[in-house]
Length: 129
Length: 404
Image (cartoon, rainbow over all chains, first blue to last red; front, side, top):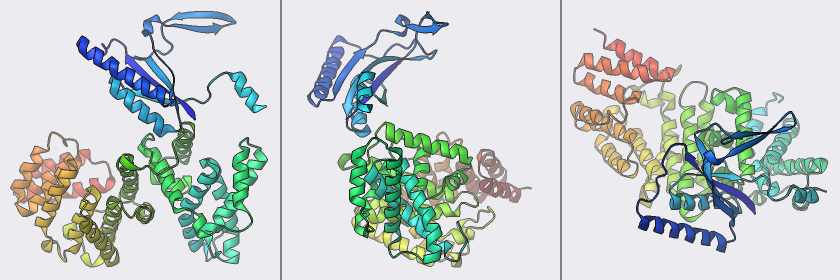
């Protein structure tokens, strides 16, 4: 079983095209809850979350041995990661199917990215020795 | 490779066996790079031995066995972790050559669907298909697409990295998934064919595409669109000898029809007839049917344009693209006259304003209506937009012929 990141992005300064009425909002939430339950039941759900905006981000770097803080997100891009799921899936087709369901439910584009490794580095060292 | 008399046959055998051998080894070892390298090594051994000793009775089996042993050697030497794979492969390899049955036909199909997975960009799909299934060298693939060998090698490395890292599955899709995925495979094969029809020195690509089309048709006999694509390529290919050399375009109306390849026509038309009997039309089958009507006509004047327009009407229904509408309009020019065609073409102006063939078609219709100046302007616009040398020289001649 592999793990995949399903990530969604927001474009800076662009208002998210969310549901317009409280009723629609409620319905959208219900659909998302149902989808997450489906992920849970099939053993696909690992973790998920929505992030605060890029304005809330701080980049921590090291310069000449000193920790250096920079206000703002990592990439000087217009798009910033807004939320993600981490799922278990046997192969890319299965991951793409989940991504399609998420994209339909939240009406956003989803980037699917395979994990090269997950868990603690120490666990991988054990396997290698 | 030594240039002994047998080398032509050896090379053909290599190409035929390449897809099968790589596909079989990918199943056994689960690693495209390992499979590709091992098959390459086996070919090197074969190129030394076969010209001397003659072809083995089962060349593909010989390649698979030799490559499998090579791969096991590589795995042992590298002491790459996956012990299970090594044991499985060693157990399966044994000492005897695998028979034809051990080379599963499905393997090639699996590899085809992996290479043409929709998560890979089109140029990567094409490169992988030609390299792994077509058996072209990296250099040959690079030449076909006018990029450097280095750039093509990088492209292939990136594509194979994604297959491995993202775990693009090695299987034939089923059920609801199949139609879309099959469409991607067919469009890659047809793209390879059309690249081979477009420009000089690329004839081999057309043969590669037809070869891929044939094995797909053998592997998926229940998919009429697969047969349709094969028929379409065969019928297009039948007219190639009459199409002119040195990059010149000879129009259908001016071709020497005695130079058309009758065997290819007979084969293509037989497939079209069996498609019609099945009654599940699709875009490739209908395009093939249109070509079958053209190939049936002894002279250009004998062409049954009414039937062609009828098939285009069906094609517009299943594949409502502006390019199909453009081709239909040209056919209407033959049944209802240039004025009717021109009206249809003008209706497509907004969608196809940057497509050179729209302006070329307008030029042709305007010339028939004796509007020489407007015709020349249309051809000039087409010339501005055309990208291939073949098209440009054809259009320049049209403009010259209209000069006052």
